[in-house]
Image (cartoon, rainbow, N blue to C red):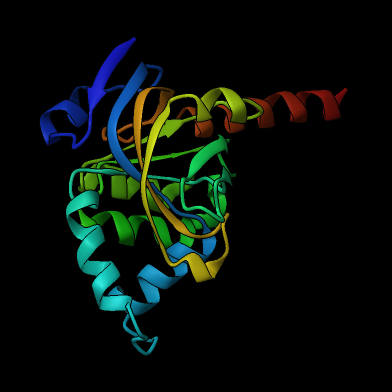
Amino acid sequence: MREITIPISDDVIRELKVGDPVMLNGIMITGRDTVHKWMIETFIKKIRTLQKDDIEVYEALKPILNGGIIYHCGPVVSGLDTKQYKFVAAGPTTSIREEPYQADGMKHFHLKGVIGKGGMGAKTLKGCQEVPGVYFHAIGGAATLIAQSVTRVLGVYKYEFGVPEAIWVIEVKDFPAVVTMDAHGQSLHQVVEEQSGKVLQELLAK
């Protein structure tokens, strides 16, 4: 498995191909539906009015996301009362929910990677080619195992969104994933969908 250090350079991204297993090391953030909607509507489309700490959070996130990774994850976190945060479970969320937002976010923040499960669509695949970036598929159902790769919780932003929807800044070591959408326009998810559709049509024709 190839070890990848975050932030990730364009050269490394272009070397990655679908099917490549990797171990990710470095600092990344979590973000699901609420975070993506907030990012796009507030700072890209600018159709949402700025509120309290929006600018402060935006400025804090920019250097983390530049060359960085966003993980589609709604973690289970212990130590909420003491702020001695620890990830107990950190499984991936279904990524297609972020399809309307992801490519725009990748371009704006110069994101190099997205982690989730189930893959994403044509808009995100095109974004991966343009940025460039890749989609990393994480193992669904392995939330406790993945949480063991989170060595530190460095902070949390937008806690008011709720624990699963907040922006958690985490440091990971040997986070396991597989490249399933690359910067060359290849998507394993698209291939599987096409092959499955073909098999289904053949079965229906019998």
